[in-house]
Amino acid sequence: MNKINYKSEVIGVHHDQVDVDTWVYIGNQPIGLVQYTLYNNKLYINDIFVRPEYRRQGWASRLIKYIQKENPEYKYESSLKTDLGAKFKHKDVTLEEEYRAKPVFSKCYVFDFDDTLVRTDAKIHIIRGGRRIKSLTPEEFNKYTLKPDEVVDAEDFADPRFIINATKYKMWPILNAINMKNKMGKDIIYIYILTARDSRAKLPIHNFLIKKGIDIPLENIITVGPINQEKREKINTAQRKAKVLIELSDKYDEIFFFDDCQKNIDAARKIPKIKTQLIDKYNIK
Image 1 (cartoon, rainbow, N blue to C red):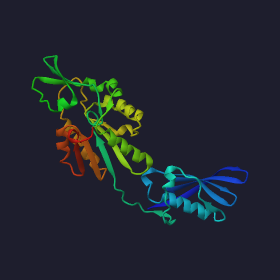
Image 2 (image 1 turned 180 degrees about the vertical axis):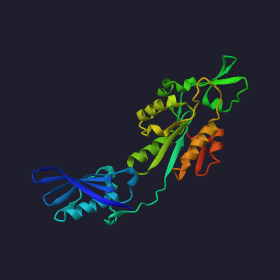
Image 3 (image 1 turned 90 degrees about the vertical axis):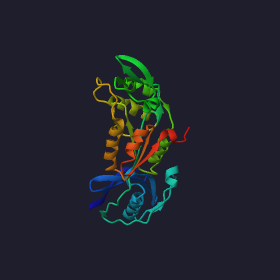
């Protein structure tokens, strides 16, 4: 078990007003901060911050209780609140000195990119005898059977111009809702993008998401496209995506996977903890 400790610092003194920052730590890791003012025998809370993974566990209440204990001669006075602050409810907590970690149920949402979150003008080109014979959308390609003498050219999907001009598609409202919950501290849900594009698309996809207000780590965008661009053959995308999902299932208690390809969904359904949704049957317009 890790020790819980506190550190306070006076950050300003003026006209009999004292401004103080108090941090709470688990071991040597800071997890929360309260900023408050002492003035005219009263204690006013200015702001409270708790790291997302520790929210709704009583840490803000613990901080308030601690600073009241440290300043008994000052009466705690409720001050103006933000919309989030107005929803805050004090929990009955103790100031024990050791942290006993509680098991946290973790879940993540994994989204395919093309024809799931967005649509682009990018096409998969079918090559036979060195000539382009067809150009297919991802939806059309999912249902296409590649002939033995045909190879695939998917270079459109490495071109960032097609990503920049993408339009939001069926699952975007779900992605946006999860992102908003995370930002408001209502939930901690991990978001991943799992795409058949190759690694050249990773940064453009990340930039596109950031521009649209979706803030996820770059490493949460996982590409399973071909590494050898000269060997332009149809890879087993379902198998590659399933391998990633198996790895994620070791990290999270529950995983929701959204994809527009039936083969990818069928492979994912064989993995414990994975809940799937085939997008062409998802009634979101």
